[in-house]
Length: 303
Image (cartoon, rainbow, N blue to C red; front, side, top):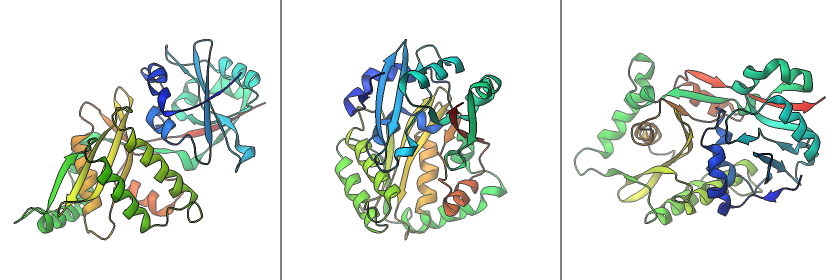
C-alpha cells in the first residue's frame, strides 16, 4: 500500500469520506487531521477498496507509527477490513480508535487485536445547550466570572466586542496567536506540543475558508485578545478545536467559551472539546464544565 503525503490541497478530495463519519472522537475532524499532519507525526493517505486509510509516522517516535480508523463512504468499516489493511500496509497498530467503534465491534476486535486504552486522548463531550446557557448552581462560578468581565468591558464605553473570523481579520488573529505563544514559549525547544498546536492553528487560520471552519474573535479596546475555532464532526456534534485567550484578563476565557457555544454550534446537540492530554490543569478545567459523556480512545495492536 503506497501512501501519499497529506496536504492542505487534499481537503476537497477527502471530504466525502467524512460526510457520514461514524466515529465520535475529535481526531476524526478532517480540518484537524490536515492541520496537525506535519509536526511530530507526518500523515499520509491511501485510497484502497473504497476506503480512505490514513497513516502517521514520526522520526522522533519511530516506534509509534500507526494507522487511524479507515473511513468509508458508506459508514462503519468491519474489523476484518482493519486486519487486512494492517497486514497489507505494514502498519500493525491503530491509534486513536474511537471508543464507540470498539463497543460496536469489541468481540471481533479482541479476536484479532490487543486492545489498550489511551486515556490521554479521551474526549470530553458536552450538551451545547449547557455551555450556551450555563444554567444552574453547577455553573455559578462561570457566570460570576463572565459577569465580572462584562462589568469591566461591556458597560459604559463597551470596550469588548465579538466578531466572526474572516479572511480580513485572520492577520490580526495570527498576531494575537504569536503574542499568546510568547507568554507560553511555544517554541520546539520549549514545549513540542504547544509548538505543534501553534503550527496547526496557523494552518487552520490560513486555510479558514477552504477548511470550512467557523470561528469568533474577541476584541478588547480594538485589539484581538481571544478567539475560538470550531469544525463539524458528525451531524449532531461539532468540535471546538482551538480556544485561546489572554490569561491575565479575568473572565475572558469563560466569556469566550460561552460565546463560542452560543455562536458556533447552531444545529449541533453536542460540543466535543477534545482531550486533556493527561495534563491535570486542563483536565480540571474540562471537568468543571460538566461533560455529559467521555469518548474513549484505544490502541489496537495486531495479534
